Length: 481
Image 1: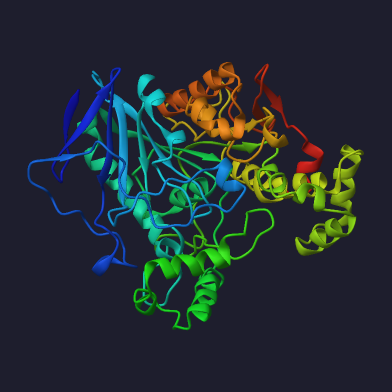
Image 2 (image 1 turned 60 degrees about the vertical axis):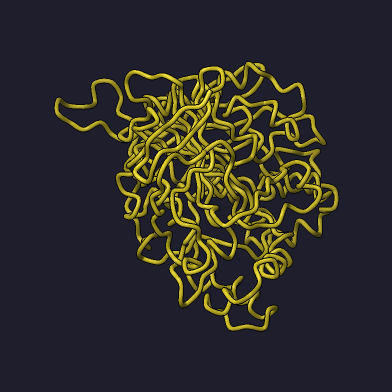
């Protein structure tokens, strides 16, 4: 059955299946090409009549992941220029306005889309949360740093999408005063930037960071990939000259430079840069409730399929310690806790803590602790709360273990579309528990366990059994704090 919703730009036609209304491919900004290429997002022109929102809209230009990651994280490629679009899932009928969860996909700021089946929002809508997933510009189009173009254009796209949510979500049954922004990997890095951006102030009220820490670089460093591309293209490193290059050629050169890079081993890539406009250099602490965490063995998504886990030997490990400036005492500490582990495991464990777990712990530590009963005085504002989690269930697929991105299918209660990473027998009870925590946080700000304080409580999602652990692996963690 079809259903009609009204936005400020015009009416859209969605579809109802099993009590859930879905609207796909709604534009929130003008197509970022032609006169709008390498510019800040521009408003959508209103339309007459009813616009179909029955199919996913175009995805941002990109090249797929290289083998073997392309089999584990399959991209969706939908051609077209109107890639600044979003999708909405909501209950067919609702009384009071419902909480809203806005999903920002990951992909190293150069891959991914909201059209991936894994991000289907029906389970959230089923449980009383309006789910919005967004596309934004990627790679050089969204995050290339030029002297003649606005910085952080992909982040500006996300802000434009959140502005659309504020202005339009009531027409879909959502509460614009109860919006949680949630992202994974590069999506979480984006959320961390949004938390401090004056441009995003007031557009959301809670935030979730899954496997992505606060991370920005200087404009000078951020421009490095554009300079390298310009050298290959033999054109000046300006937006004006890049706009003259055929889009497919631009993608080929971008992929040639960045396609083999990953968050653990590094390499050329794209970053959010400090520009003192969208992203300030010295931001205040985030003033909204946070849910944040990572997976127990993040590194295995890159180390296992590529064979790096077995290729890393003692010499490689020593060179990596020098590259990342990791003191020898830290390596000895990790070896002592894993006496039979391969050098690749030692390196991966340290990389996970250095790049993810440590920075996320620092973010949690930088915020006021939750007040204990009796601490608050009448009239005091409730302090912001922070909740920390770790995903520990180990996938049997290829020995991936508790790798990067594995938790997404559990969060979305969508294990069927997460089988490439989890296998066909992933535990549904764990998905029930984890999905419910995200629903509860989006609804009330409380996912169901103790807020962060001096005891450092971490909710460990595993199967069988999910529990709260105080200060897990504290001795290793202190090496990075």
